[in-house]
Image 1 (cartoon, rainbow, N blue to C red):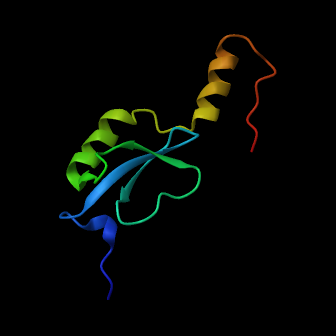
Image 2 (cartoon, rainbow, N blue to C red):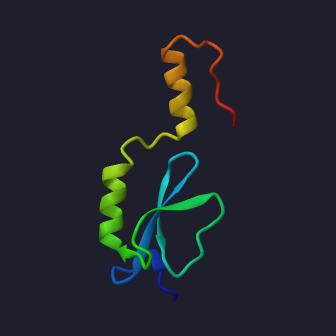
Image 3 (cartoon, one colour):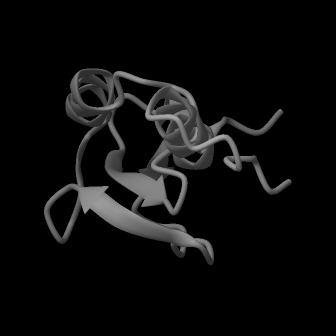
Length: 85
């Protein structure tokens, strides 16, 4: 049975972010997938626990950015605000 590289406490990781400001733990040995960028981690990555702690501190609103934007516009009276799915 193969080990899950995302569970490797001895591995080196990045925190990735996408255009919706959603975050992901990512092992350094895998190429960063399209649509994602490195948001945290030294060039050679950092320990898994450090990345998870950083994500927990940083990603405080789990709603996608597009949804937060629509809600904010509606709260300011923009009745044309909608979510593009």
